[in-house]
Image (cartoon, rainbow, N blue to C red):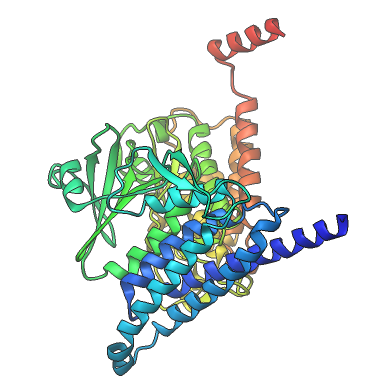
Length: 473
């Protein structure tokens, strides 16, 4: 009996792995689809949510094995459909588009039916997430009917679901939230960003994509950011897609970018405060990139890490943004990098090896973040950083360190900044093989921050808190 249970768990685990792999391949293939673009985009978005839930299926429950096998088959057909939509032939485009559209509907119907056979808790989670994609969903708790655990769709019960995923806004809602796009926050390479406020109070930043490149940037950014959940990553609140208009709604981060504070803002708390503030900002941003490389599934390569894409919130907590160029890491190409059609990123931060070979990897993000670290230490624009002299050890930290903090660094601060500088130097190595991974970067920045904090005088408030906790114990 025990052996049978072990065998069942292994079989279910393998099926989940296969289904998750198919979901990832479908999502990556959608980015280059030429036909039935809308059907491909919607399929990719739904599958990104389903893939997020697959890993939580109970592997010891024999009920899920059979529907998982059938789901794997349905996903295989969906993958074939998306690959067929990559065909550039005009004749195939004309004669095959309608047939493909019908096939997409059949595959979607089949996938939804199979999901109804899974245990209640997982089906409820998937259904609530899919409900967020519906234009009719208003963001309030909804009532759905789901099968109880261990049963099929023949036996249903009612549940109230509180949605927690991004919401699909209408054009009218966006116009209302932004007061007809009255306040422009900035202009990026893919479109303008406007400030808005939702009906329930929170401020948002609405990125309106340029109409000449809506599909090339919209689908990858939506699919990737839809699933990201991290304290140091700007959260996607929702999106809008009507006719040729495509927009993203992100939470609004109030204290502008790290670059603004280093280069533009006079008397900035970031440059005027002790070095701890800058090191803490670098540490938070590094944790966000580490999450993309180690915690996200599939692995995400940001491709545009820069101080302009590191925002600071009301508590001066860093938040990584700018996912318009992000891509999933291709399976099997982790070491040598994956070939891309064009090199994208911000001048001064782009990995030279990636620029030369058009092969991008997680180490490309490491290089870019190395430039950000040097920028924070030196207070200079990346275009003026003498990277070759830094690599060759011709420049000492004491000769290039930003002098804007009111006091010269103490010996402990200098020790911590040397750790940051040495890490940055390793990150900008011209060969990707010589760079550390983000986990090592995070560990080094944590060490640097501990060195700084351990030698700082303790505030009265902190001292009082420690004394109170000691007396309570």
